[in-house]
Amino acid sequence: MSPVLLLFSIHILLVQKGSSATPTCQTTCGTIPIRYPFGTAYGCGHPAFSKHMKCNLGTLEYYSSTRTTSNNNAYTVSSIDYASSTVIIIDPLMSNCTEMQNSGSFTLGDDTPFTLAKENIFVLLGCSTTSPMFDSREDFCDTGSGSRVCRGMYSCRGVTGIGLPQNAPISTCCVYDYPTGIGLGYSLDLPKLQCSSYASVYEFGDEGDPMKWKFGVSLNYNDSYNYSDACKDCEASGGFCGFASLDESFSCVCNNGVNTTTNCFGQGNALSGTRGLKIQTVLTIGGLVMSWMFLLIQCR
Image 1 (cartoon, helix red, strand yellow):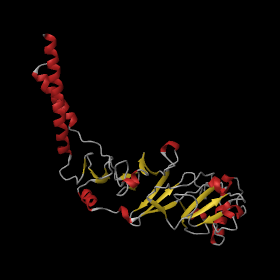
Image 2 (cartoon, helix red, strand yellow):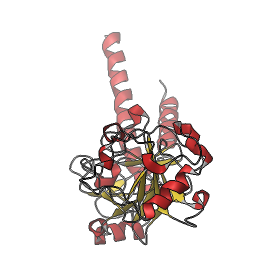
Image 3 (cartoon, helix red, strand yellow):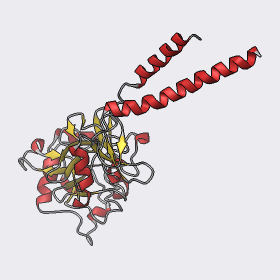
Image 4 (spheres, helix red, strand yellow):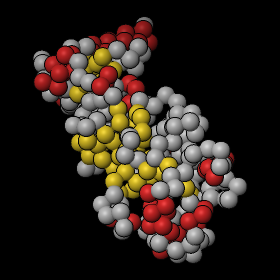
């Protein structure tokens, strides 16, 4: 190979290596703004949230320890209110006034960083009369205002989806405010409770009109995941707060894909590209030197 061709080959490799990397942590997922402690992929945000939430084709999803991508039972995150530390998730199998269906079990998982918000009203639908929820020795069901909620749900046309006629008797419906004690990790085992479906209402626009109710599960996360000084410094430099995969120590993820232990000042594309160029140049020249040595040996 002539010296001209050698230099030309090196030049092409340098240009290709100089392009910036694709950012690994995004600031939005669909229409939802993403800020710490959340992230769009593993290594972004706080590690306690990273294993439960991720951005999947523009949809932010929550996964409990028992609901994973493999069984296609992720909960959809519909909104995040950072001011109140509140997240709203939607179970695709949960019922609402428009559509009711047989639901699976609801669970947040034992290792969840979230707690159920007090605003949630869980409504069990199509329950057997032998359900443990109706045990006279227990006080699971709200027979006061809960009765109005049950009548509202059973007035919906969607109730036919669980095999009940519209305006069916509410004797198969149970409303309870806060399902503590029903399993571990805030679990709701519908087969065990002998109920066909469930709905969760976190806000009543007009209690008499269930079409105006807001269906979903409201979750809170606590203050222990607030910003650290290192995270503030990282964001001030244009980075995204994340963590290292080996020991989950703090890491600042820069827009060009570079991870640092401090911030992204001085970690722009030019510096990152220069580092890559040096490595690529050495390897390329080394490879060509080895090729020349091989040809010399053959000639001998």
